Image 1 (cartoon, rainbow, N blue to C red):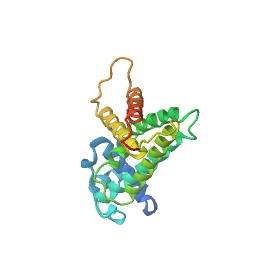
Image 2 (image 1 turned 90 degrees about the horizontal axis):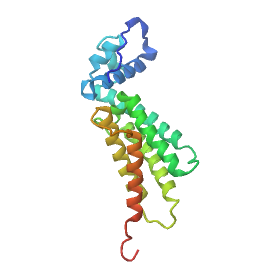
Image 3 (image 1 turned 180 degrees about the horizontal axis):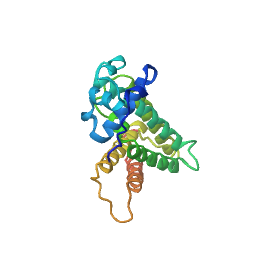
Image 4 (image 1 turned 60 degrees about the vertical axis):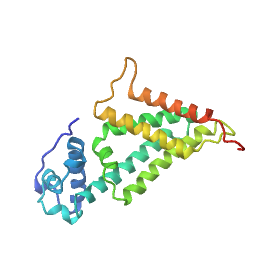
Length: 209
C-alpha cells in the first residue's frame, strides 16, 4: 500500500516543528518504500526543507529511523493496553481484542510498524519495545491465571504469541497470506493463539515438579 506523498513548501516549516515534519516525512517514505528507502535527503525533500536541515535533529538516517521506531512502539504499546483494558469480560476475550489491535496497527501504520523492527540501534526504541512486550506478558499471565496450578512460563508463551502475531502481520502487509473462505487474519491469529495456550497448558510437568 502506497502512502500519499503530500508535497509542501519550505515556508510551511519553521525551526520549532522541523523535527516533527521530518518524522512525518520518514513515516510516509518507510510506508511506501520500506526502511531501506529512507534517506535524510528524501525526508528533507518531502518535508520541504534543505538537505542540510535534518542534521539539526538527526545525525544520520539511522537516528531518524530509530526515532520513528521509538514513536511507533509508544503508540503500539498504548494500542495493546487499551485493547486489553481491564481484561473484561474475561482475559481470553480481552486478549483476542489485543490481537485484533496488533494487526490493525500494522495495517494502518505500515511506516511506523516497519520502522519498529528495522535496524534497531539499542536505544530508546528498545525500551519502548520492551514496554509493549511487557503488556503482552501481563495479558498472557491474566489468561493463565484462569488455570490455577499451571506451570507455564508466561514470558516464553508471550514471546511465541508475539512471533505469531508479527508473522501474520507481515504476511498480510505484503499480501502473502491467502485466506480461505470465511477466514481472516484476525480469526487466524485468534485460533492459533488459543492453540498455543492449549499446547502450553497440556504439556506434561517435568519429573519431580
